[in-house]
Image 1 (spheres, rainbow, N blue to C red):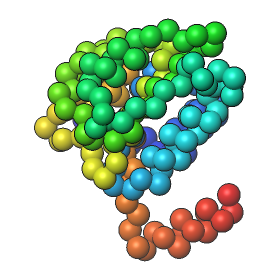
Image 2 (cartoon, rainbow, N blue to C red):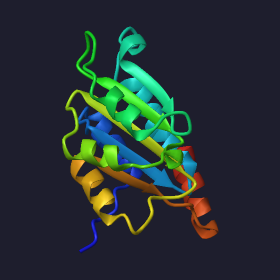
Image 3 (cartoon, rainbow, N blue to C red):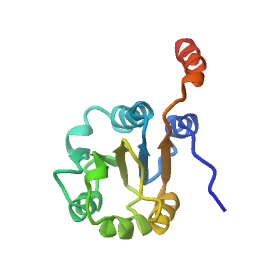
Length: 158
């Protein structure tokens, strides 16, 4: 049975209510919503004075999965949460350590993985299942041309 898709509005409303999940895996062909969610987390979860020690931005092409897990297992310093943002998550090789982490994520860490211009390989169903169990698996689908007028109208109203 397929899981219902999580929408942008659902994710943002949960975040605004400060109901944080330990893992946010943001993927898809449309980078707009991935960036919006990532930016909201980066700007609003921690207070400005907490960010120096508790907010880290990594790039998937520069680190491996084990380094991400090591960073995610740290405890926050003088804060309730630590935020770990991994951009270009599509470049991470050997995701097995991440899959193990997703089974028992740190409650004090908010791990955000931004996987743009694609999605997780469809053959990795166990991997996507562990992500859903750990937190949020969000897919940002590219808008079709006939949906653009409604999107623009809603955007301008907001």
